[in-house]
Image 1 (cartoon, rainbow over the protein chains, first blue to last red):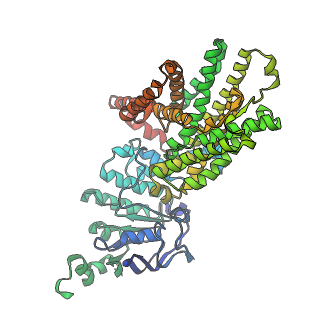
Image 2 (image 1 turned 45 degrees about the horizontal axis):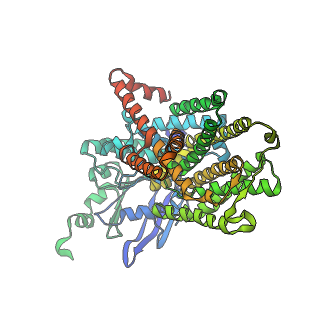
Image 3 (image 1 turned 180 degrees about the vertical axis):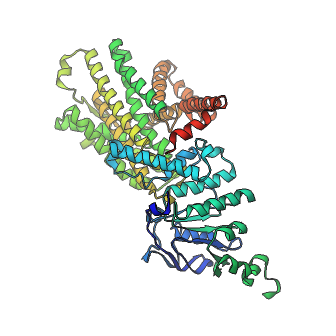
Length: 265
Length: 332
């Protein structure tokens, strides 16, 4: 697949003034940023900064207390997770979430749910169209498994994979839903530095071939700095900084947030 | 997929030729009950095995179907070929209502609420004397006219044929469901609701589909039961049916299509042979279930597939077959 054949819409994801409070705690407060088409955007911050909450707000697992999520100008705030997936935004999870009892191939095949969707009666009386659709999603599943470098494990039950392979499978599963915007929550957690580098290379090839843009939460700085076009830094639920990797690396506030500001406060 | 299909086809072919060799009415009766329970267990398995929620209210659908057929046949003179599908449809409708209320619940909550639905329906059947004749039940559900003249053996063969067709229909629909995109979606919901939603699946759609399909099939089984036994009373809603179905699904292996058939075969025969043990019978079943849950948590079929997979994995090590599946699948 080349970028010319990528038949996905090209929309900007706009986050505007997004906020969520649990009781009196503002887990996320007034976050705004864009993910433009073709971009890889990193969302970083110390633990507890609200990155995952932010993900949950965008993908509809939580409903925001304030603010808006817009996709291509359309307000999609508070849509259900499965509706967001249908709109082209698919996420992975921080805590590994896959279909444990199925094989790698079956996992990715299941991920093609939207593409393989048929009217109900077709389920019981499949014709040639259904068989052809099934054939094409099987091919696509095989391709995605190989793209993610899991080809040698294609028939292995997911429960038998190593930690690193599970992270790859999770991304493969998300890719299978053919998202326009792929959202990854700490996909490299548990990978060693070599695996993380390979993973970064894979991510870069995904843009323009399988997805339009990527929003990634990650603690592995060399991975984030290596793949992202733009980085948004969160701290205590608020946006601290935004800019290119070079800007962020030189930003004093960011360094303070990570290393502790010490006597400033 | 093909392994399971071959076993199913072989079993059904075997079942189809059975009446050619068996002339004994008692054996034929047991065979009919095996087919009947195979339909019930398969339909319960759609919920327990593929939605992953433990329904204790499956008798609600069986009973609804049985009463529907009995009432339509005795009071409105409907023939058998119309009452059985109608029994299925009405049970499916009850499935939609019960599903809409219970499928929002999970785990123990789902178990308790489904159980109470079956109990409520039993109380209705017991007390709505105008419609159901109360605890007396509905006796003399009519048989097709020509059967009255035919011999007992011919009648048994006739009902065996209907039960076979019902089971064939059950297996066809279940097979299509399980090996379709919809079946994969149901399994995704069973395995992980978060993942299912994040890839665009609305969980309720598929838990509902499986439940309603199960209700349709057990409703038709209920309609069949009404005509075959020719009596329907409130005990069709009783827990005893539920216990048999659960044991069959667990012993055979939930989440497989062949499992419930094996379970139905084993349990129906055991129930007959253990008749002499009377009260001890249920204790023996209890112990059997405990043993299965402890030692074969995936049931007999799960155990067999596991053995098969273990053997299959051992083979490629000797040859170069490990590359074969990938090359076979990958597009040019």
